[in-house]
Length: 234
Ligand code: SAM
Image (tube, rainbow, N blue to C red; front, side):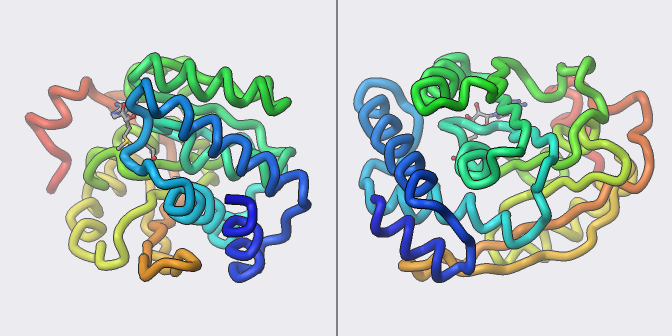
């Protein structure tokens, strides 16, 4: 894993110390081990995990400036993209959020073992975290929900002036235009979709960059069932 991560980061132009590469490989090893007994990720091959979890997550560092930022990773699962970002940018104050407790238990334990006990792991539904409303500079989400739903989970947590970064397939134009009404209703504005290749794979992903331009109206986020029943689709 170390070699793949180190070479991949270099190909992406992302600087990393040997200790940071080692920490990612160690986190990956803990993930692979825990995944034998707990369902944390569908990716069971360490080389694929190195590329599709660690390098894919790190790609966000080429999309936004994370230096010194407060970051929430919504639906983080086994810690992606949040944990690789925190390893590469130790000044990031990271909160990972997931509705499955055992996933948060894993991230908490693995981060503590690697000296990142400051990572806050919240077991809960993102739409129910009203105490954290508009408190994060950057909110990320990968493989959680369709963009019009993910926007209602993430934009209420994003500070005005901050960014919501959604990791999607490269051909996400339709999904992005379908979500435009929701994004605007929630106080956001789509800035761009940044496409990137994951080194060592034929995978191309798109990072949808959404700016938070005004406060989210107080009626949002709604309960999940309501979001599904009455989607913000214009
Ligand atoms: N982001 C990780 C990744 O890319 O590897 C995990 C993706 S996994 C397919 C989606 C995760 O989102 C699951 O762990 C699920 O529990 C979580 N999730 C879905 N809806 C959520 C919500 N409303 N609030 C918090 N977590 C949620």
